[in-house]
Image (tube, rainbow, N blue to C red; front, side):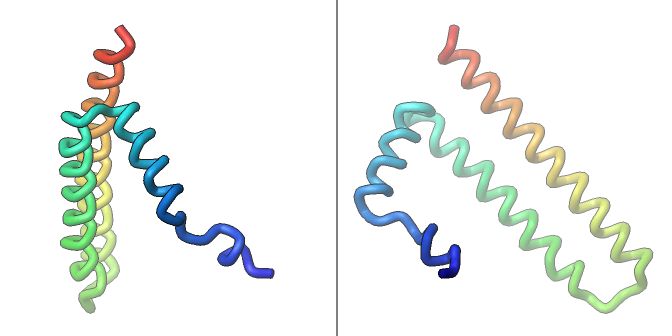
Length: 92
């Protein structure tokens, strides 16, 4: 049996439980900020993807990959820092 069928998409009840847990963990005010950061990361990835698909020399592809990787790492560090600041505010 394929593992795809064992771990399918969550149903309605599972989604409600997941949303409830996320609301409990992050609170209503921080969820839009976290989603905005996720959206920025996806947009950055989508901007970098066509550049990677362009027919160019290996050197320019490596440069594009390095630049995209660097900007994604910086964005991820920024979001992790925001999350840690938020989490420390909840715990203390």
